[in-house]
Amino acid sequence: MTPLYELNNIEHRRGNCTVLQIDRLELQSGRLYALTGANGAGKSTLLQLLALLERPTSGELQIDGRALPLQDRHLCRLRRDITLVHQSAFLLSGTVAVNLAFGLKLRGLNRRERERRTLWALQTVGLADFAERRVNQLSGGEVQRVALARALALNPRVLLLDEPTAGLDGDSALAFERLLTSLRDQGLSMIMASHDPALVQRLEADEIHLVGGRILGHPRSFSESNRLTAAGSPLCLNPLKMQER
Amino acid sequence: MSFLGESFSTAVALLLALDSEVLATVWTSLWVSLGAILISTVAAVPLGGVIALRGFCGKRLVLTLLNTLMALPTVVVGLLVYGLLSRQGPLGVYGLLFTPWAMMIGQVVLAVPIVVHYTVAAVAGADPRILPTARTLGAGPVRSVLQLLLEVRFGIVAAVVAGFGRVIGEVGVAMMLGGNIRGTTRTMTTAIALETSKGEFAFALALGIVLMAVALLVNLFLNLLQQR
Image (cartoon, rainbow over all chains, first blue to last red; front, side):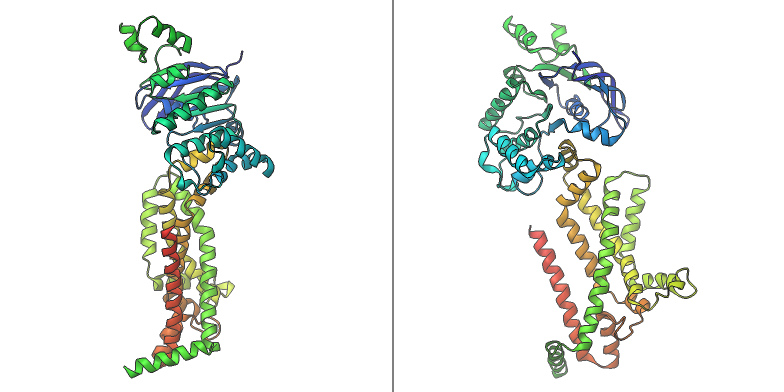
């Protein structure tokens, strides 16, 4: 089966600094992956590349077995299937409905369809009555949920999430987690960066651990991680430490 | 004191009577300056956006140059544009000197650095998440930048208003390029200078009141924007 993403010999530099170096990585569709690692490990950079917001400095990034198009307008078209929800999401000024309509208008959907999708997406994140609410009246948790609704309304093939529950209080984080579980169960391809090993475990995500811009070991499937935990060994997020044992 | 009081009463009477000469002078000032700021906005806002968003060699020099141009004396601008538009100048064949168009060109030169400078400040101070957010939602490069400009619209309107404030109140360009011709190129500022020297203090004061009212409106508008 052709992988959703295939990365070969990817190197990404910022100035003179190499921030990401991946020899090979395959990501399958319909799965939930978790990028783990310390701050500066390259999780957000990898998400930026997967969201096609940046091109890798060198190496090959394939989507559905095809290399990235050279022309920006073709890349832009491809990007419409992938949506990234940033760690600290930015909402456009105006109302919640304006935010949800933005991407839908760009896709040429008519008003009726836009309204239908907006309502559905807001219901999905539990904010059905928020369409006319101004974004500056929202709490931090509500902002994250609106950002997720904005992404979901676009019906993306791939949903990328950068630290989706960071900065949320207990109840909001729990609601968000339930939502991600439900999306995972529906078979949506999701890749999220997370600091929280417990969240990764609860979401039954396949783990990709990054250290200093490199992937350590192989991506570990949830069942693999679970076996380790069940055998009495604490879930070790750092494969280097695991090897030491 | 009675001189000032009497002049003020006469000025108010002129305004209330909608004196045709006062109205003609105010109208010339307004349309020339509004035209100049419109042209400046069309040129300067995209230019400011490009300067703010693009990293290029010599960017710091360009910004320093902009700051310098902002403080350029109006008579120097008048002098330079006069050189271009005079009969011996490269644009002399168009016969623009001492027409409202010459004043408009001079005012554009005055306003562009101001509008560019404040646009650069507004765009550079914009939330860095705007562009990636727009792009991840499916916007192309042009639509993303348009969205960014929309998000910083109050800063851009403030830039335009600041540019308008500069050109409506300037006297050097209007005097040197317009020539203060009655009914054609006489603006509020040049008329104030001329009428005062002729001893027509009340007439000059009437125009001064209008000019101050315009400045007040511009400032009220800016304050309103800052509160949003």
